[in-house]
Image (cartoon, rainbow, N blue to C red; front, side):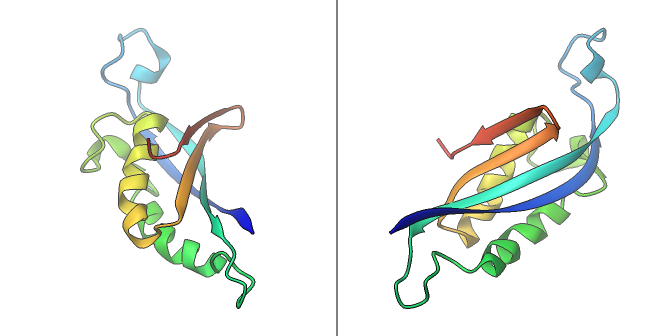
Length: 120
């Protein structure tokens, strides 16, 4: 049986999109209350009844999410651009080694705006 599981995290951070024109609102310093969903996919182990324990998702993602929490994203090594697209990719690269079942990362920048990255 193939399933998908997800676990939600959040972090608070400021940033500027300095590559945009100065009259664009995101050029200015601002912040977000980001919500992140880490999704894994695969076959359920019939002996445990799990694809993976949710605690394993938490163990892999929490240290990486903490690297972003209450920071200025423009100061984070490896985040060339601080758009949700690049943040998704940055998270993927750091979580995947400890969570090989990773299938999707979704970041909600606001309640109505999100980015989905599937590692491709």
